[in-house]
Image (cartoon, rainbow, N blue to C red; front, side, top):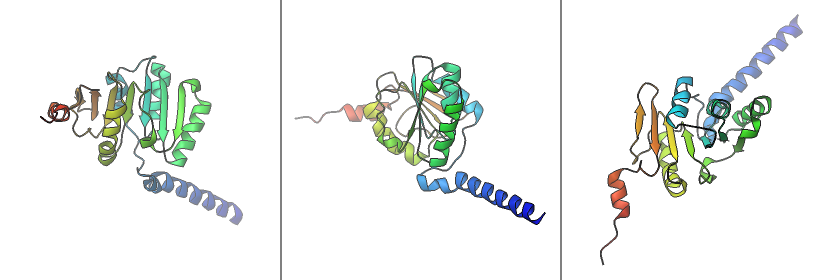
Amino acid sequence: MAVTLVLWYGLLLIGLAILAYFVYASFVFGAGYQPTPRRSVLAMLRLAEVGPEDVVFDLGAGTGAIVFRAARIYRARVVGVEVEPLRFLTLTLRRRLGRFPDRITLVWGNLFHLDFRPATVVTAFLWPGAMERLRPKLEAELRPGARVVSHCHEIEGWKATVYDAATDVYFYRWPEALDVTARTASEATPSE
């Protein structure tokens, strides 16, 4: 009986340690874990008008709420990007066991090292500082007509085409999203 009790407490401690790592220690990698609510995921995919011809980049894919829905429901090709190892392992297992694994590519690494040129849709639920750092990369690499959807945090300097207050989702279309004042300043050339 004592051995069973020790085993039970050992498993409980291991489970708590994994949970603590999953939620808190992942801050070491630059982002804590906060899943995107289901209704926000559905709003993001709906507003972006995701379809079978799209290449969706999900930045900070977490455990795959957007990745697997975009592939399963909309038949899009999806690139899920995650830097935190345990969440990446979860994504890998879900991809292996789930439907449409051929439509999903997983990238373990820093989203700032990606090439966004193939993306037709970019989804993100990132902290404001990350969104600010991401903006110049998106501006340099997105092709015209690409759509960007963000949960909770807007892209500073861009004007959302749609903001869904019920789900806290911002929808942008590139390059129309570039704020008119920012566009005017960047297009101005010095007089000679």
